[in-house]
Length: 175
Image (cartoon, rainbow, N blue to C red; front, side):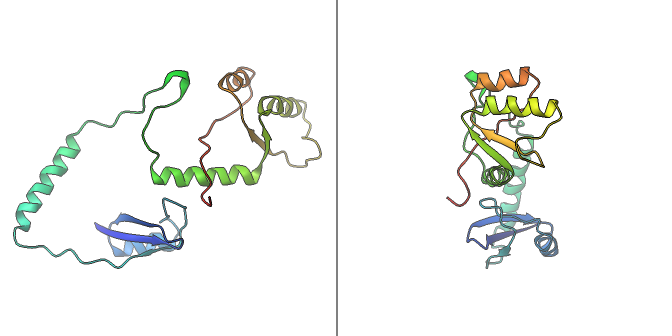
């Protein structure tokens, strides 16, 4: 395994582990190495100092092996606990998840219509039109919608057989 310090075209620094240098080159060329901050796939290795073992390297290897064994025997991380009201309690969102949620937000904004706080009513109208076999007003290709709904409104929509999903709506990658 080889550890590389990496930088995306936007200047975000991060690191990654690869089987060998060829594995990095292959994955980067295919666009599989992406920045956890912005999702960019234009990624390059940064200049790094080689790891040269010093006197006592055998003892460090033994300590590292012991730490690895301890980590392997540690209990599995538990899923976040459910908070009152149905939300999840957790710590900070990992950078890779933030990048994924930012890309998801961008896709939703590009491909769906924002209906604001009247989401529940708009979802019911759209569902009714779809049940009747009609298109949304003036649209040849129906689009999804997004907006705000309370927990109670979202639950009522689900009870009525209307598919709704909630995603964390985080700040855009560009600001």
